[in-house]
Length: 446
Ligand SMILES: Cc1cc2nc3c(=O)[nH]c(=O)nc-3n(C[C@H](O)[C@H](O)[C@H](O)COP(=O)(O)OP(=O)(O)OC[C@H]3O[C@@H](n4cnc5c(N)ncnc54)[C@H](O)[C@@H]3O)c2cc1C
Image 1 (tube, rainbow, N blue to C red):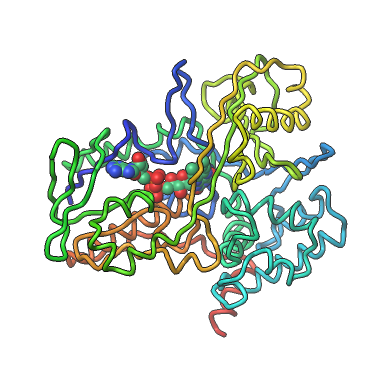
Image 2: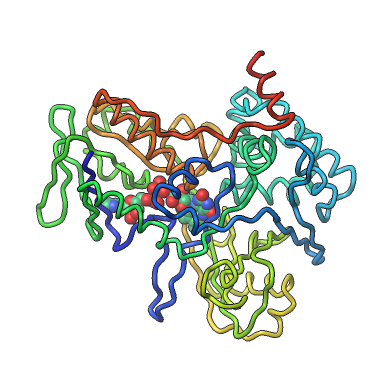
């Protein structure tokens, strides 16, 4: 099929992209990471020739408020126990707390990935954890540390189903599920192959091309409307914009008459804040660290992670579900994150801060609140030639690049099957390994 892609910005990548500052420095909108369990994103990167631009890390370093460090790394034990030895050295928790965390992880593993049961759907992860006997320290120092950044939401607002899926797919079912993938290049450089793939098939990629609306006649979309009265028509239309934008572009009559579209309004959003720091000297050796008991959740050593950016002078701090920072001034946020960074990285206390930039994304992702799956529409719509894509559509996944790619594959599958040429594009999850495989089989039997 010939594809014409309209992108309102001058570059591709959407929320997972990068741009140039006035001084020429190219920065990511925010550090983006992927996990080994993101099989469709990996497939997408392979297809557009970006896979070798992703570096993989199997050692995750956690630092507590006293500066104690511990690494999470796979052992030789079979899944779901491969990360259990790391849990034994997890910082800032007592032995009984670690044991109870292990028990809760075992109970997630025993579900074998079947997380759609009543105790997980419609209830919050916080309630689920309390029911599993997890105390506040275990919740804030372990569960929140992993889940808030993975799901971009606080546990009190996260449906347990999403959180259990993350633990199962990333940490329990397969040995490589937790391996972190981080681009070696600015995010914008990942999509060059994407443009080329469309153009090689006689398609077109138009940037700075904002769509202003969709025209409908007799229950079909007839054209997209652009500035200056230009219109383009096609056989099929895939609307792949954030959900708030989709509601503005869809014809009002259709939104009012179709429940699937009306319900999109119920989706809530959650913010992410990041701070970029440039120092006059190297201040960090690790490629990244995860912080406990602080507002900052991750510090990324951007110099070390990116090709050709020299030593550890350029860092980025990331705070997911950053509700508490939305009303704070940029200077206050810089001061807060710089103070935390200096506590964890002694070299940063001696260094001079050259430049700092705060990026606040108030509507970074949709919020995986209890019941939110009800509002996520399918990629097929009641209009036969209109399809939806985007991380917020019904993929089963939280708002991630993996979810976005899945939505695109599902939308393309839907178009192909409408044309009578069905094709499977979606890639399966990583196969369960070790004992985890046994629990998958056992839950299927029940
Ligand atoms: C700060 C931040 C950090 C994140 N960190 C991670 C992470 O570490 N790992 C991860 O997996 N995910 C992360 N995410 C989520 C990830 O970025 C998104 O899930 C993913 O990019 C969504 O892709 P999408 O195609 O659904 O939507 P988008 O990326 O939002 O793409 C929509 C596109 O539509 C374009 N558009 C909008 N309106 C119009 C119009 N009228 N006409 C034409 N074009 C239009 C936009 O410019 C954009 O390019 C993060 C998101 C943010 C904001």
